[in-house]
Amino acid sequence: MSASSLNESNPETTQAKGQKPRILILTSSTGGGHDSRAYSLKEWLGEAAEVHVEHLLEKSSWLPRFGVWVYNTIQKIHPGLHNIYWFIAEGFARMQGQRLSFGRAYYLRLLGKFRPQLIVSMHDCLNRGYFQEAKAQLGNSVRTCTYCGEWSGGFGFSLNWLEPTADLFIARTGAAQLFAVAHGMRPEHCEVFRNMLPPRAFVPAMDEARKAAFREELGLEADRFTVLLAAGAAGANNHIRLLDKLLHLEGVQAIAFCGKSEKALSAITRWKEAHPAFPLHVEGYSKRVHELLQAADCVVSRGGANTTAEALYHGCPILFNRMGGVMPQERLTLNYFIGQGAALDFTSAKSFEAIVRTLSSSPGALRTMKRKLLSLRTDEHPRQLVERLLKLALGSTSPK
Image 1 (cartoon, rainbow, N blue to C red):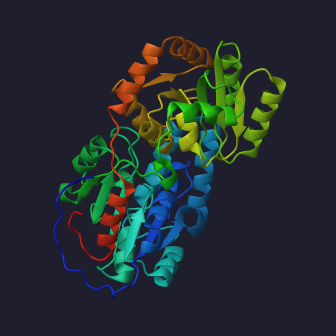
Image 2: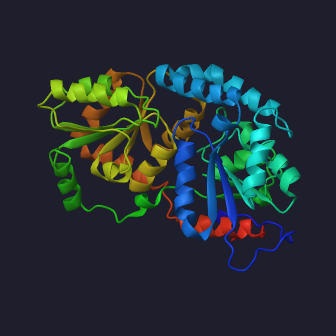
Image 3: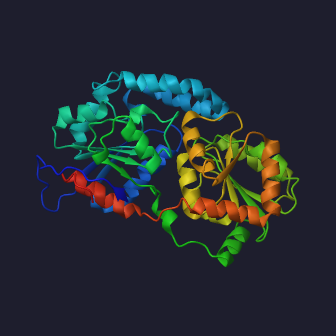
């Protein structure tokens, strides 16, 4: 973990010997990345802390709950519309100010009941106002931290991520950190940590023999070019249109997972039944994405920050799906990877077909993509982040 020096301060309260610190993680199910990072952190903290994960937007008030529904509906129907909705959501969150307008009573009850020593926000709309209310309710001893999952800065990076009073701001990349500092975050309170992934992602990597065997376990052929079609937690995807193109490519097969959408799972299962000669493995919400990525030659993603992070960690070349438009926050991911030649993108099923045809018939092109992707990889381990946050919860603001 790269870190900037933080000023040492004396905690106002002392942790009783042997008592676990209480850590409150704030998240929301807008897409799947925020939740994925929240629950990954909870897993890594394990028995070292008393942890509560709260979906504050959904539970605290009807208006933010409606906003979450609109967000996920747009993502499934027409992602490009987020270029309009983004400004509405951004403005609403900035309106909250230092005193919450919506969901305040619920949040104060939560703080009074759980009395966290550290609050970690995993969502851009859960920083400004929430940290100030916590200090007012619990006193200055409560520590606050934001983990920002964006890959770069610019349009799409919500300024609601940036609450200058936070004790710690963790960016996923140096580019995102620089953007945060340029827009008001104190550099001495900013750090970088990339691999906020679940424990299952850190199992030993598959060798070629295990990769071939795993493909066969999925009902696929060991030596075919394998495309992984990914979907977010809400199930937004273009899998059927893409499968129709893969069907006509020689030596190609696919894996498709569908998030939590039963409708998407049913539709793709029907497609598989209608095309029994095409090797295809289908599953719903997958908890073995780390294995599917290793079994694939490339992954198709809409630019979700966490799917991309896992693809990077496992060295699986990325094809970004821009069909139906690109959400502002997805632009941050695309700009980071495509700008460094580490990924490709497509805007139609026809251009997708052309890319897969090229990669499946040109091993050199695929190796070049993979090499550029792996040049961006880091070997940080979440245990480093856990150690940092536990110290913060216990009152220390010095790095590591």
